[in-house]
Length: 376
Image (tube, rainbow, N blue to C red):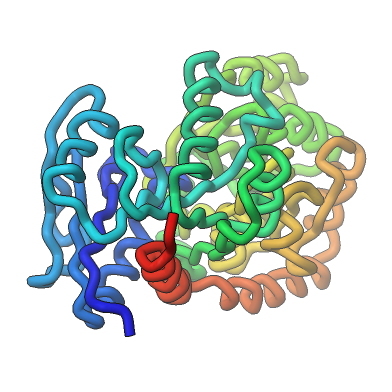
């Protein structure tokens, strides 16, 4: 039986202001991992670059919060120094990079390799850092966690990471995301974001790889009375997407609502009130928006690419994301075929049950223990 471990975790991504996929992954995973690990008497050290909110994570004598304030070079200087002074038995980074000078047992999650496929969608410096950090994590870590089989295949084919070094561990779904049946709650959220039902919803960052230009064109060709709601914070190169909206006819452009970032408290109502969620992304390492919509009882249109068929299976309407006409036809079918839409809703509820943060934590703890025992 393995001895009780001290597990060091980079928790810096859990306290960012506007939480997106990787920040949500880090937060929900640690909330599930900490009680699981501590009940087995493992010790947890959480490293932060600023003070965390109270009660963000379960309290326990086995959990130590270590604040390392530093505006710059936090990972490779300040965090690295702390790891050298007080080395854990194994170090885990859920959404970041292993410090360059740290050679102890470590595990890193790699969420996707989208930059390989869409290098133009990133600023030059960010692209260089993504290339280096992903390759560095893959080579330095004793074990690598991939969110999907699709991401594992990318790590093997694009970065040459050995297959036996990679564990596929599916993320879970935010347990707070459930169908909202109170119409007053939904109405209040829609009013807040200037949305008039019925509407079709896209809920993610606005960036090129999300295929929003084709989505807008497909919506414009659908002839439906629904609003198209694009909800999410603007990402790199979002301006051309907004220009496509302004170049539509006034009838179409006035029916497209761009909300900006949506707070977590509004997501369930926004998802529940939509006729369908549209997510024809060109590439995803996992695809949280598919499961978030399904958890709220909303049918989903998504793409036949990367991890999306793996996550959705036959519980969503899959279309070729490069075929605008196919996207249009998919939108029309979801709106006009109520029986099919309700069938997808029921399949979606079943699909969501496959994904649990508790199970993610169980598998991750096994990987952390394996990394500790593994000879590098």
